[in-house]
Length: 142
Image 1 (cartoon, helix red, strand yellow):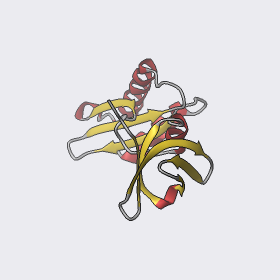
Image 2 (tube, rainbow, N blue to C red; image 1 turned 45 degrees about the vertical axis):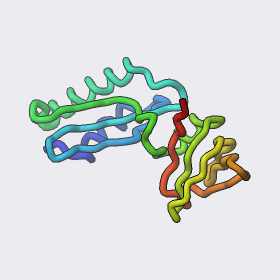
Image 3 (tube, rainbow, N blue to C red; image 1 turned 30 degrees about the vertical axis):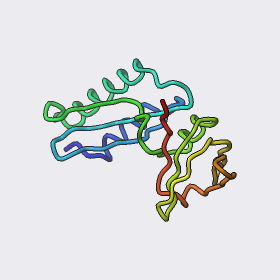
C-alpha cells in the first residue's frame, strides 16, 4: 500500500545530498499524490521531472500499485503560506503578509531571518517567532 510515509521516505532519499527540501507530501482520498520541493535558488522543472520518475519507479518496485495513483511533483506555490525557513530566506527583501495568532494582519518588507525569528518592516519594525504566527505569505502586488 502506498502511504504518505513511504512517499516521504522515497522522496527524502532522492533529495539527500541536494539543496532541495521536501515541503509537502499529501495523498488525498482519490489517490492523488502531491509532492512539493523548494530551495534557495530557482526550482528546476527538470529536477522535478527526475524526482517524479524516481518516486514512480520506487513505488512501483515496492508496492506494484502505481497504476492506481496520480503523482504531481513541483515547487511550492507562490501564493501558499510559508512552510519552512528556506521560504523566508528566499523572500528576504520582498513584501509579505503576516497573520499573527490573534488574526491581525501585518504587511511589510521581510528584512531579516534567523534561527528562531524573522523581522518585517511594516509601519514599525516587527519581530516574530515562527511559532507566534498563523501564517506568512508572499504579498503579490500588481
